[in-house]
Length: 640
Image 1: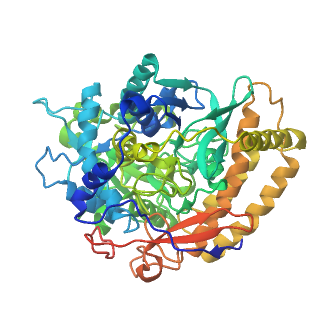
Image 2: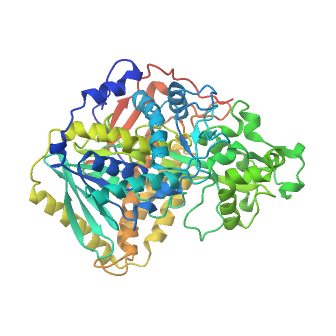
Image 3: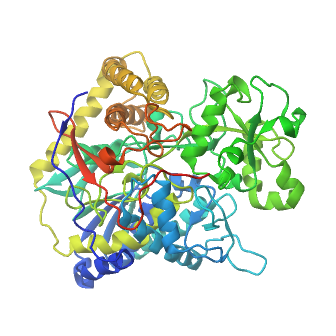
């Protein structure tokens, strides 16, 4: 796949000056919209997870007219509900040395120095407000005996800054955002469209002005116009087929925006989560995550000797290798996700993995149960232990869990500036759908932090600066008609092929290619192989996919086929981005670029930049945004 290099890109919205003053400076300089004018403005928000739900609720409360879209039957089913372990915030209730600056530093370091300083510092600042907001909504965070909010540790930090609601933090936070959203629905400021899938972005006169959606129940194609469009549609981890994401998670919305001119940044940055229940057979269509919070009390180990198939209880202490504690004594089992994932892969590659196929390591709670008692462990992790037992048939109270890395989160996404606006004016992108805050690796418990920061606090301020110049007038009818024709043409094409293979079979094969050649470890050879296989498989898809049913009904096969078609195009760009970035950083590990200890070896001279890809008829164009560090010195990451 050929590409060309284009002009450098810069974020011109982030103010200069002391980093701790930049967000306040930007808030003051942003134009305001008076209440009477807000009632004349329309905003579309696609997605109702933590980012989209909180954004729609807040914009509605501010007085804008909001249309909120989701493909689920209720906003409560957004994938944010699956988040387990917690949400980071620099409250320092423990008095253990945490601060806004330390959260900022840990996040930049955790992202392997591939994130913007201004964005990350703002995230750390806003984090303290999120907890107050959630508590005011009634989110039942865990509390200590005296009534204060409790915190626990997560990977990549040596302080305890993660607030949690047992193993259901995402669910509880989403219900808080959902009730705020429904309050605005009842007030008439938000109009809710469930079971609607966005299939095209409408760009008129250079601005994002609306979307084309399909009513997933009736098949009707609808047009919706607005003065600004907000995408909060999550990540694209399902390009790998097997991932911890819900089966509905897809890339269609952001890929449509990319085709309409929105740059796609760092698509190769994929997070592999170290604590997933291992694959158990070909029949599986998704994987289940065990929260990273379990690494607070669980100890990760494998047998010292390769090929040791004894039951874990029969392996004496002297013949166990607690490899994370051995290799990384400072952080131990709480190293960041990319570090823990690669370490697990390495010991399994040495033949020391456990379980079927040797693709697993133990996460053992024996010491914690002996130290704290079973009741205390059950209070902290009971629902997670129950979920593990239901899936595996094994009791984690009496034998160690088996875990193995799996695709979880995507740090890449649409390029946005400090205001969260894409390269298409009027198109704002929030939460996991953008690239902005995590660099090459996201620290655990920071996804919920970013989603709520963007939705409750950042976007409602910055979008006003754009909308202050609105309303933007009528949308060109010809442009809308063309967008609708494009959607209908693609649907008709998918239905007309009448081949022999299901969309799922193509998706599974694409996922194998991506995991094998662009997964936890990439090489030039593997990536070039993927770039040969993906176009060939895509060609077969458009020749031999079978989509049953019609377009004028509930048709999940049609939905899947459209999403898989977009995954093919995204997969190709991901592999190209990984091929061009000939360094290792965070979750992007090129085998050719590692130090003597097997750790990721960055190349700051050539790759201290964001890779922002433009879609053109002639092929991808790479625009580089230089990353400049004033407050954190770039250095080789060490958690030892």
